[in-house]
Amino acid sequence: MGAIVGMPCRRGISTVLGALLFTIVAVLFVALMLRTFAESASTLTEVTNINLQNAAVENLRISLSRTSTKLTATQAGASVTPLYGTKEGDETLLDTLDGKSLNIMSTALLGGVAQAVLQLVKNGDFSNDSAYWTLEDPWRVDNTLHCARVNKTAQSISASLWQTVKIPSGLQSLALNFSYYFYVRPTGEGVVKRLSLTVEILQNGRVAWNASVAWKPSDNGKWLQFSESVPTEQLSSGSAILNFTLYLDVKQELKSLDVRLDNVSLVAAVPVAVPSPVGAAVAAAKVALGNAGASANCTLTMALNATGFVEVYAPAAGGAWVMVSKYYVERGYAWFNATFRGNSALVYAYSAQPFKLMLDYLQAAQPSRNATVVVTNLGTAPVTVYAVWLNGTRMRVERVLAPGDSLSVPFDLGSSGSALEVRVVTPTRAHVARFAAGDSAP
Image 1 (cartoon, helix red, strand yellow):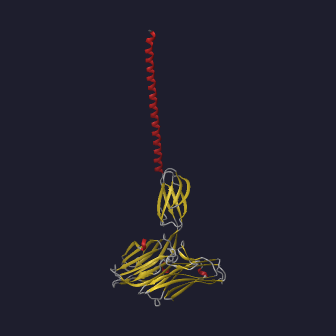
Image 2 (cartoon, rainbow, N blue to C red; image 1 turned 60 degrees about the horizontal axis):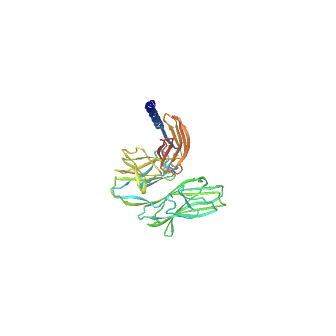
């Protein structure tokens, strides 16, 4: 009977102990979950704070440094071709800022007739390889220098290159311009018997006009300019051939020979009707710089001798021209500077009275091939720079920049286009800055 009474007591004690143990385990589990959650939240907060700190600290200034070579009009191979009006003086007057100017005398348009200028040569700068030209060996087109070139030695050479041009009807004047370059080695006395370049205009099976330029030891390795008016009496409207022939005769084969031809221009002036003139008189000219690149920064100092307007145009796509600046000249002989980028521009002036457009000084700043990217840490914490990119070129850096520190990374731009993009790679991002090809500052 006593044993029967003891069984319920032991069962009650077991139940209480089980409930107590379950409660302890549950409390421990809840405590563990709370601790894990707190640690995870703390870790996430720390990571977020670090990312925010990095984002706030990485403050980089990116600049581009690039030197330029300043060229005078002669050094830049400048030529001024009148489109409307008459030219007075030559391009050497543009070398010095001295008030002695090359002038374009305006032409009156009230009568409805003016003089138009036509360029008869196509691909005269050889930028489109050998298009429109026929070349005899050893003439070839150098697609790096963009010129026709002979750099193959021999004791004797007689080789031509030519292009068919169309002489317009009503021809009033014709002007031929081209740049040429002779280099030989050795240059001792009597070594070169003959080295010359003869230019001819052939029409109807005969030579209508010709001229020659010959090598001189004093001009060895120099670019020179040929400019001459071509008499029109022996020419008629229709097809003609503009032919250049290289002649070489030496005692013995040269160690080095380099002959180049570039910027060939044959300009014809013809009368044209002008509808709705914008003024009583206009003057216009094309300014070309044969030795300057497309990224050159040019300054042209000019004036009018009367009240009028001057507009400056730069080449655009499809052979069109786009206006880059316009000036109102309130009084005569007020000199001002017009700027343009590239190696050619059109200058167009007009007035209510006859005038002259005066061009006094032309300078071209040609950016060098070398550029330096400067990265400065403007933040409050060190920044690791892994690499610096300029367009498609990567320079490995792997350097830590302390606050206020800078690093300079040199690049060779080579044939980079008109836009330059810099990317600075850090642990958190790629910092990007963009510059025009002629820029030299941030």
